[in-house]
Amino acid sequence: MAPAPAGMTGAPASPGLMQLFLAFTKIGLTSFGGGLSGWMMREFVQRRRWLDEGEFLSGLALAQAFPGVNVVNLSIWIGYHLAGSAGALVSALGMVVPAMFAAIAAAALFAEVAHYHLTHVILSGIAAAAVGLSLQMGIRAARRAAVSPVPALILLATFFALFFLRLPLLAVVLVMAPVSLAAAWYRLRGAGGEGR
Image 1 (cartoon, rainbow, N blue to C red):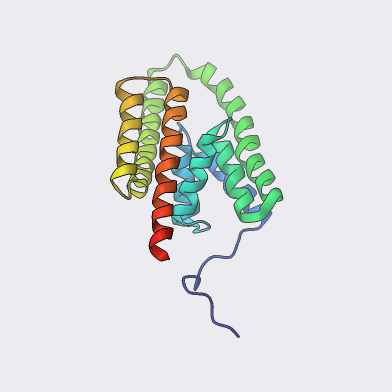
Image 2: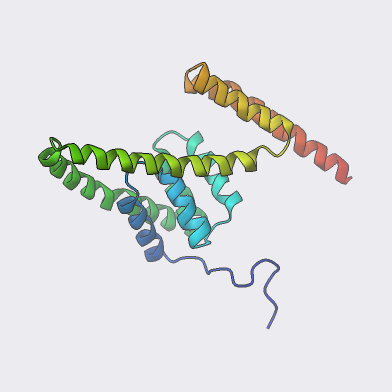
């Protein structure tokens, strides 16, 4: 029997379609208050180890670049990456359908309890936890992206333009994405040249 490839010993097997559906259903039903991509990173990279951190962050970057809801795009990408077209479909359905029914029920319940002060206190606590989860994932992604001074400058310039100057997101993306791609192309070209 041939030995396992380096780095693959003890790696979890690829999930089946039902496992994908249930995993995304769990995320969709338990990740209250936002921060879904951070929750997905914890679930699929750290807990289940179906993806490594680099794969997940690449998928997240693509999901944010495509039109539509980021977490649905990300669920489609993860499902496709792990189980092809069928995986993409069941992952998106697992993320959206059960959560949609839960949201309808929650909206009906909220209409009944919205006048209680405790309801708003609980929702504020959930929102704070979600922001913390998103911040944790953002810091991890920033550390991985800022591999040299140029990507770090692009990251800081984007943050400054959006947070401090409050420039429109689309305008910032249209400027910074080509700059980032050009910097990556130049770095890869230089690495290829060194290898020759």
